[in-house]
Amino acid sequence: MNEKVPMLKATQWQTLNDCEMNKENFQALLRNEIPSIRISNFASSEECNKLALAIAKVGFDFYKNVEPPIGRIGITQYEYIKKDKLGYFDAVEKAKKTYNQVTSLSFDPLKRLATILRQNVSGKVQIAYENETYGYYFAGLIRHINIALLHIDFARLDAPDWVIGNITSQLVWNLYVKAPSQGGVCKVYNRQWQPEDEKYKTLSSYGYDHSLVATSEVKHNIPVTGDLVIFNSRNFHEVLPGIGERITISSFIGKMPGGDLVFWS
Ligand SMILES: O=C(O)CCC(=O)C(=O)O
Ligand SMILES: [Fe+2]
Image (cartoon, rainbow, N blue to C red; front, side, top):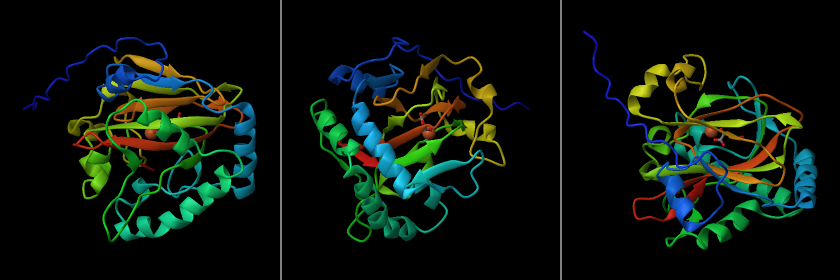
């Protein structure tokens, strides 16, 4: 009868506090030994105001078939898993243009983060590249999230036939351009996705059942305007409702088998 599901070795995080960016912490985050890294005041309030104004000018699109609704500017590889790859790479140029349009009125968060990462890792840090036919990925998704269901982001699952499907670990960074006045916490659980977790996936959405994380340690990442938070996106995570607008800019950071870091959205 009951097939045995292998037990996951649950290793406690070293701390539940916010960790700063340094070489040791970055490697610890890749290994899921700490819950997140926070770069406080990554952007000034003036820079964030300018970004928010530029974002309002461009306006959000909403994902099809995602409930509760999430607004976004830019494209995601996730939306193209079941469509052809060409669709994603065809849309990269336009998405980049819009990203540049927004960031040229303030500053480029992806560039600033890449510079910081280069000081903290030995390998290369660059935007992910598929091949000569498809070219570069897009990185720098702008989102308006009120609630995000319990989920993970892991290219080994979401992109098996793409270059990013080769990553050995995956992080995500979020710059809080506009934090809600209350709530909007991103809860990250000390529970990394395993193939057998797919049976906990909710049928009608991208969410997973909460029983998966019922006994897991949890880190509350509080959105603060101007702060940038990086966490391991293979860990189950969710965004709780808040009061007021919540606008972020983000991308994934994958570690390739050779150790180089790649960005994509
Ligand atoms: O907005 C956030 O705090 C996190 C959203 C999320 O699910 C992600 O960046 O992977
Ligand atoms: Fe996520």
